[in-house]
Image 1 (cartoon, rainbow, N blue to C red):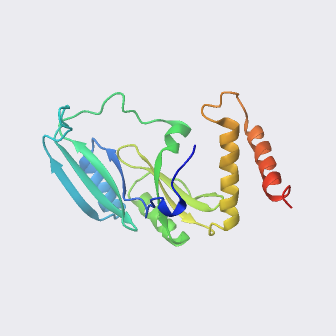
Image 2 (image 1 turned 30 degrees about the horizontal axis):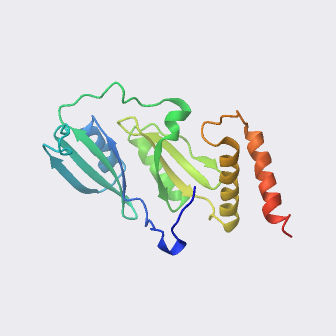
Image 3 (image 1 turned 180 degrees about the vertical axis):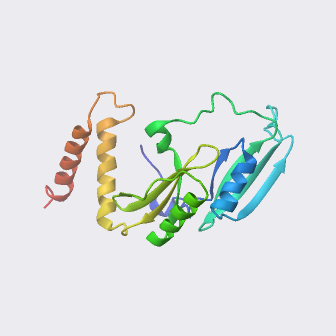
Length: 204
């Protein structure tokens, strides 16, 4: 993939403004995020006759936002009078867990406070899970959406960034899209080792 922009011309992001999801449980959703998680309501839109010109309009809807820290938000759409559509299914198992929203807390003590609050409120929550540079709690909201609160256990160092770039380069070269040659993780690790050799040792 070729890009014609110079680094100075590239647009830049300043963070995530919001993520958004549909809900069919507006009351439970507000009570969960406002009253249990303690997120302040930021904004709410209510509209009728919405839709693209010439297209089928949306049902009447509300779009409401909760503050999630550092100027970010989590938002929901409630389409009035609609029923949960069969094709809108919540994936189970590892595929369902892969699609989630994660928030950050600064200290392990804050993570423990959330775990205690969730358990007192009857929210099903995991024990603290440690993995690489994060300690995390996992839980589910009233809509069935998977959520996480994470605490960074050590700073991301320059070597981590170098390693991540090497890993993704090896991933692209090994698997491409849909892994047409049925390569394995061992194949990817082998290619990553070759990239390390090429970039850091063969040039010495």
